[in-house]
Image (cartoon, rainbow over the protein chains, first blue to last red):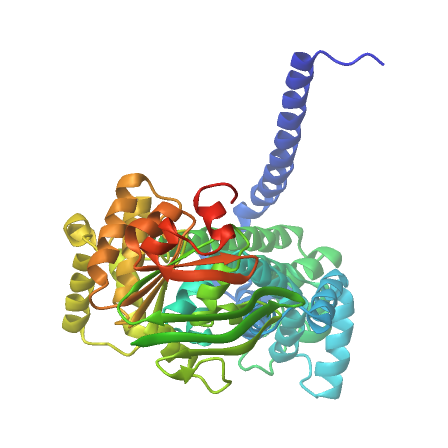
Length: 279
Length: 250
């Protein structure tokens, strides 16, 4: 086979890569626009602040917003300390050995398990065995276990990318290991850790299967950790699946998409401010 | 007076022996230059003194290292105290990613200095000792990463001084610097000798000749010889030292 003229090859590759990028952006924009175009007309202050009526056929989605926030907060409250703690242990407090490899392998496997399996597991352990019932507690814990591997692995990567020299300098300046971790290593790794947390927020907000099993689908406003609650994703699923109201389903989806965008934008803003302060 | 004394000291990383039965003394208020080719164990030697090798997996020692009469290889040694007493400057300047002031205050804060005025005075004093004060006094709150390489390294020396150490360990402190910056660091070292004991590991034999009172030559983990710098550079007693100094290898 004759080789291509290098200059032609160069041009072809450039066009190809450009097309790929364009396709990615196009798909993303298409999805977002598709949802916003159908959802935005439904949105109003009352849609956000009122209780649903008639199984969601009319009225707003206020309880599902609260439910989503509560579940996500619960999940993060559990998963972030556990995950970051595990990552700090793996990178700073132990040498590389069989145990650390087993932990890492376990986390990777856990990350690949379909969320509905987590749902089933959470249902059996939290809802039935521990007797938490369908509740924010059960759902939050289930989501926490679901996002834990992501947080562990991204935090670990972030911690490992902190230069060894920072650790040496901190230690040589008379810091204990814990002071080194809290004053030098964690601040430097924070952008990476936050990226993992944002990913987890996105997954928690968007999760449906695991939540239906563990938090239930009550449309009432949750009042405690033991209240059953419906998240926006579950609400969307039920509205669409059972043909209750497509416009309201799209409205809910639009709120979801906007919320996730907002989370991303706000955290990146905060992170930029933080990075400026530390460099 | 003897400050540091190594007795039959060996250092291993896993099964690899980086230092082999080294016997060496460092006198108080001298500059001991340590020379030798790459892989000769001179950095390992330096990092044994403040036990920074502990950060490396599989690190293990034999023999003893006495600092001010106390064997620091013993398990009960307070490492934080030891590292404050033996401040270290690294080959590549490593300012922490924070402001100049915060870099300077890092060590003292860990040691419990909270008083703002005392910190300010300490920061100023140490920056003056490395001739950096005039250059940075108006931008103490800007990032230390924005300084030039030479300034960063002088900041690192000043940061060590802020620990109020008795010893300063330098690991090829000028290897990445231009001649003018190197000269400034060397000037600082000569001035610091009055108050500190300095161990200077260097790749640059001429630097050892310029700055140090005594010079030790390491080769493949062994101390070949140590003596007054003048004698080492004019009449070394070991053939290998002569070969190295005259540039026949390394």
